[in-house]
Length: 418
Image 1 (tube, rainbow, N blue to C red):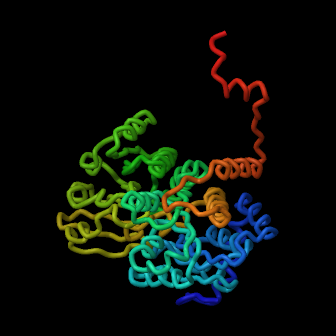
Image 2 (cartoon, rainbow, N blue to C red):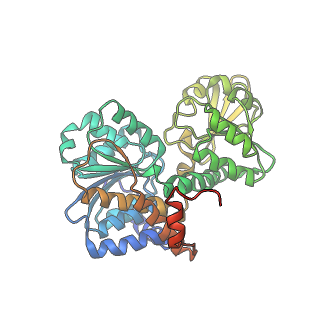
Image 3 (tube, rainbow, N blue to C red):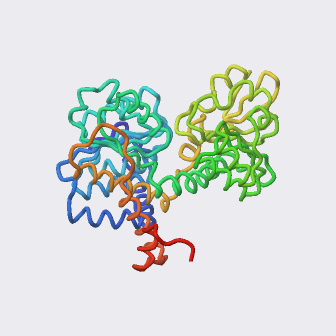
């Protein structure tokens, strides 16, 4: 057992209860775990994971271990680790290097400790593990057969590596599976982001001007949930197609320069940097709240916020008040890190059930597959559809099947207007 800097040994029992609770709401992964227990597809395989250390991740780790894997785990964000879960997994023998509140130096120390275990498969959320291996631990590349990537930001980084010829082993983009992004990104991020905002502030959303920066699948989910809570939602975008879609979904669309004057709550979900910066902050009304739901803490320019402020203070956990030089006050949530995990518990277990089922089955696919070229791959269609079918079955939802005549018709071209 290796757990660096455990918070308290007494946290493990509570972590086990959290993992048990999550498992009860993750029936697809439970079915996969039962099969893995029988078949042991990862016997003798070392898996290195850089993921948010949550109760749902605990269920995934236990599923991989049930399949025979030796798992080493670090957190993919300095503020997202649930220390109870880290303690519980370490107690059971997983090599865990994660605790809530890591410094940047400590964060990368943890990443490197996972690499020290010489993983043959990597599981990543944001591509920091893959990036560190490629930049600073290249001697480990020859030992790695493949990896998976959980989130949009990570996939973007990995595709950039592929484009420049930097990527040296195959990665399956779990994020791009239908059973991941249509549900995890949209419904999971939507609900958990609002959860983080409400836990940090306890404000009333109804009637507030709520600005969502970015209308990808995460932004869609946040906008949808904010609207459902009675907020007046404005979307900012740089992509004309997404902006048009937001308009036709019933949202007000504006440039951030305009929205910054009227917003009460701002949430960034773009994957890019400096979305909200000095020129926007100085226009904001006093009392405006800033939150980020993107993977990295670069979407809100915190240096700009510091530079235009005369003082700051912590009002309550994950709520920091900045008094600007113009006298107005802005409130930053969770230090600008992803608010749904830093200030709440992340996505609900029911959603992570499908995301982590993709992780488990894609890991099995990589282990069993013959040599693959070093590029970014889509999740195999059969895995995606299997997970959807298993989820429907667990929800006791029945769907129709095509009969032979229908299959023939839809697969042919000869029939025209009758």
